[in-house]
Image: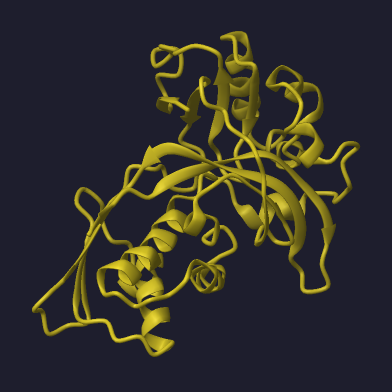
Length: 272
């Protein structure tokens, strides 16, 4: 089975309160975008439980720590019979970008195993399993725009389409520690709820929509603030950092050719 796990962006991200368990409650909108990894899952005659191949990418550390293998192990632990599998994962979504590449791979792996081996797991149960792998993983089961609360794992479907717009995604070679980004956040409730903001014209999002991580990350990495401003200078209607990662995106009304402008970054221009 061949699938294309897609990335997501966060349209706004408000860190509203710190929880007793040390995590933080959020408000955000997850929006799937057409930037893809490639995942192939097939039955194998291998005597080992799985074979993981990542063309062009080194498998860092123990493969058991890879989210696609964690997804496989989770279903096996839950009692589902899965034969030996050959897994090919071609990574094209940048890592550490705040675009959910690893989470997408995990969510799509659950879907692939369910369909390939006819496990009969409904989407609600798949979301439950995905949430156990990571807060963002569950959004890739239905793979639709959602308003998310809690730690990013409580979803409310929303009626939102950016069809007709173009998305420019850039990622410089910068690593951001999620733990450090959170440690510098002062939780607060936004002036206007995101569910209200996304109903406004996109041209008004710049006034109201925020990613709270920019307040803690931009002072550490001024280059990111410069890149966001450059997106606006190039004509973006709305621009922001995605999640707590180091990618930024700009929403444009027309196709853009800005690769030379952001020559030191990963660059993609995507039709939404």
